[in-house]
Length: 220
Image (cartoon, rainbow, N blue to C red; front, side, top):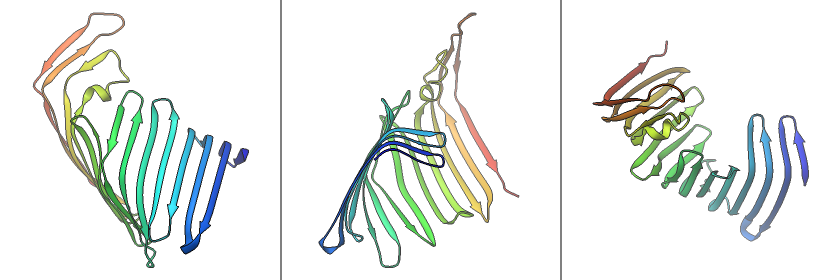
């Protein structure tokens, strides 16, 4: 199909093929080009789903433009109690200026009365970004986030005039209790060198001993 549209959704080209074999085994292939949903645009989506309700595999590749892509491979199963459990076997996240991040194996589950994500970690060299989350509904949930040895040079990529060799370590927890948000975060900034070279004016250099950061948000 070509040039599909519905409300704020647009797809330039869509190819879908599905077969249902014995023992309710489904094989589905979907390829889509030039997708736009609201402000989000994707150049292509390639999805493969194969297996049964109790044992299936999904492979997904979504790309926005050269140098920006998400690749995921996961296994899943659906129980008779309407609980889905899955495991990310491998994955990659590629982003402009942030480089290529490898997604480590992680487990996830979903059920009408609760969902959970365990051990999701993105790694690049010595840097890592990890998260765990659990929710019973949209008003009650909790999430833990950890950053280790994240180079600040990645975060300052949008400011070419600023260079630094420091790294950030962070531990944070965010909760929602009946819709009331609460958060705690503690972090450390390693000692290092900071340089700022504006288009006009003298360059500025700073050697620093690092810093400790902490923040608390209490919902009312």
